[in-house]
Figure 1 (cartoon, rainbow, N blue to C red):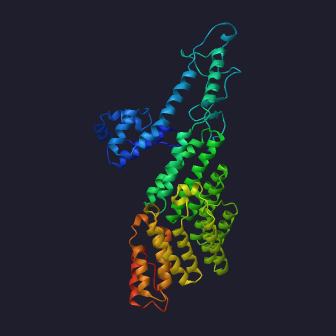
Figure 2: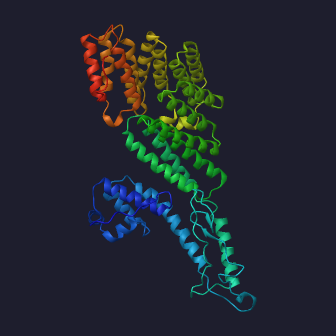
Figure 3: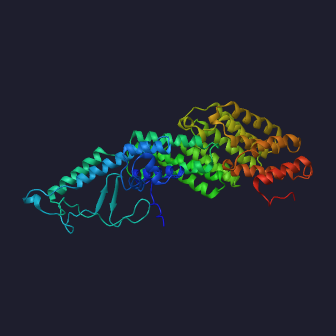
Amino acid sequence: MSQAPRELYPGRSARDLFGAELRYWRCLRRLSQADLAEGTHFSSDLISKVEKAERWPQRDLTDACDAALDTGGALARILPWVDTEHRNALAHAAHADIAPTGAGFGSRMVGLAGSLAPAHGFLPHTGRITRAGGRTRRGGTRGPAAPVPAAADGGPLTLEAYVAMTAHESAWFFDHPSNVGPATLDQLRSDATRLARMSIGNTPRIQVFTHARWLRDHVFGLLDGRQRVTEARELYFVAGATCGMLANITEDLGYHNEAMTHARTGLLCADQSGHAGLRAWILCLQAMISYFDGRPRHAAEYARRGQEGAPAGTVGVWLAAQEARATARLGNAGATRTALIHAAAAREQVTSNELDEMGGLMAFGSPKQHYYGAEAYLCIGDHSAVVTEANACVDGYRAGPVEERSRINEVLTQVNLSQALVADDMEAARDAAQPAFGIVPELRTDALSQGFRLLHGRLCAPTVRTAPVAIDLRTQIEHFLAADTLSPD
């Protein structure tokens, strides 16, 4: 019977992270450890131990696995963190392995029951202090107090050796004040930027979810260590942005409560980072989640809170546009038009900031603003404005850079356009909705399902329900949603 693979904790250590990544790519390529050994000319036993975080990976094995698994250098990017962790572990082991010296005062022994017995153990590779009977920052009980370090021969250390070892540990702290460095922070920011650009709706949601979860775990693991204040703020920024992206993906999947949990965590991280733009962005996510969860009043409140401290980037435009959608859902046409005017004014005053430079989900482009405008006008019954805004959205996405084109936002706008056209031009309404039916299942979102349900309801109106085009379009929607509970009645 095959043995279950050893559980790895990528947030705990770089070696676990490397093993988890190696296992991920090997399983993705549907290779056994023996297959990978054959392809890399390393033993399957070595690959097994590296994968289980029982051996330190080396450069030659890393390069061979990257090539054999076609990872695009994923393992090589982790290796510097592993090497740093390995060096730190070796250095601490050397500090702790000091032989007894001399006689006289320095020959007094430090026993387990002595007054100098330590009440804690130091883990240099993470910067954590373990205390007897204490609690971890995760809330779990720590292990027993660390025993007094032993000399090379197994006996207790002399006081002189123990003092020398303690001095070495202080020097280690001075030389290693942080478990991250510029290269690590640059890589994390790069990972967050790539994730933001994956999150605009053109990548399968579960794939984005997996990447976001991995990045969140890794950053939280680093935060469990120690950093300089400026480095900790940068880590909290990446953690907050990643939790925000998890909130967005989770909302796309239709899990409103869970999405809000991610957003709340993201907001706490944003507060720790001291980043006003990130805080405003998370508040807008909370407004969006509330909106799709059928709580437009809460959505409007979140959007207004976000605008109070929003910088002059596109996040301010997003907040005003989100307020417009929420107040439109509440039926307040005056507040909706005012909010849309504020969004247009905020667009005129935009000064690009680091959120906009990251792009993707972190930025709010003009086409997406038109999508929000179309939906807001639809809710207050201004159908001519819906047509104008929807066409501007579609044209904007098609004319812009391909990497910024969000197919899901484009078709959401076309579903809104279809709703606006139902009463006056059924053929045009059917044509407008057609692109949305082409969205593959792994890219579909809960917002698209909600839009189709609203369209289905309009097609059931007494004035159009018996029209052949309306019947055909309703049938398409029902098949798309697999919604056998929907009924014309």
